[in-house]
Image (cartoon, rainbow, N blue to C red; front, side, top):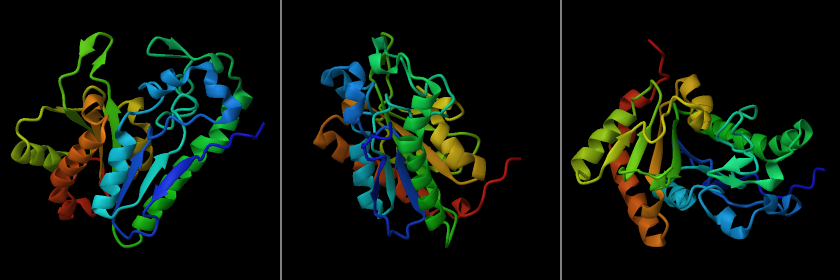
Length: 258
């Protein structure tokens, strides 16, 4: 039963000495052949339930702009969600945005463990290695990139993008200020439509927040980055709003909860 052949992660700029690590949990819609598309059509897999549309392209381009390492999950979130704890009910979803996932209807503990062993854990181990590598000279910053649907449950989402964070807002505050100064016409959410305090932000909470590493999660609306022009535009926007904040000396120490 160890036949899953999907690449667990993609690594960019592995030899970079930048004190920044980028991650993208939902970069891929790839499903291994032995899982037979989880019983879904290719059209279903291409929808937002299978991945974060545009997020991987922005992450790759931003890594090039920053000269920073990036780790992107190489498998669809429908197999096992890398941004959830393996024991969480949303880790392997039998129903996603109203769509039944046949291949997840009778996943037993053995199959869940197989998916975690071959895909989930290698991805998170790659993040840990990248952060250790970046930490040899200074405290590294973790940047996560996601995307969200323009409408969910018939409710329109007005934000062009949003910034997710936990208690450590060292990076979020100057990035918010940079958006206001450089792109005042954009509507930027603060911990919405998701919050950095929830299970939706497991990867950042696990790898950065609990260790006192500065961090930020960018959520970008999917209709803005579903084309090469859109991903190029938003790569430039993120580069611009990060330029000043990443140079802040306050980032270069371990944050301690008051």
